[in-house]
Every structure is written in C-alpha cells, then in structure tokens.
Image 1: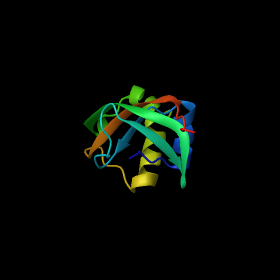
Image 2 (image 1 turned 135 degrees about the vertical axis):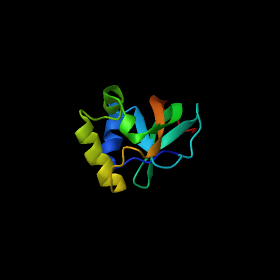
Image 3 (image 1 turned 45 degrees about the vertical axis):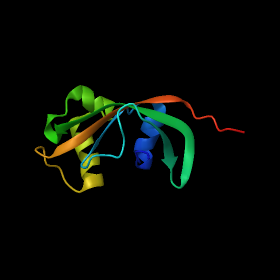
Length: 109
C-alpha cells in the first residue's frame, strides 16, 4: 500500500516541503505504517512513515497545515484541491494524513 501523489506534489514530498495530505476517502494506510513512494509505474527508493491519521472539515485547515501541505496560502491550496478533486466544499469531512520521510529503502542483494 502507498499514498499516491500527483507529480508536482510528489516533488514537494521528496524535498520535505510536504508532510501532510488530505484525502476525501480514508486512505489505505495505518498509523506508524511505512510506505514506499511511487513515481508513475516505478517504485522509488524512498519511504514515508505515517505519523498521524485523523478527520477534519476541509474548511478547518490552519495556516500551519497549509504549509505542511506544501502551499503558501489557502487560495493556492484551494486551487490544487479543486484541480484534483473537482471542487471545494469547506464542510466536506476529509482524512488528514501526517507523514515524514524516512531513510532510503535498502533493497536486499
């Protein structure tokens, strides 16, 4: 299992700029779980560890959470959300996943 990210967001994850994501449906991850990242059809040699899993109204996102999502402003985050999910409803309840990059995945020889 893994969290999939659009290419521009994956770049933010890999740079450490994005450490939180919101999803309209419960993602198939568990708290403390470690997941490899995927770029297109290829698995990357990088992992993320889920450090938080909660629910929240979309409109309750804070300025700090906007930065953790990898954006500079609510307007920028809203535009990205609308582009991915087709609309913005501040009353929509979403899943919030906190994560951190962990060391590079080591393949067994």
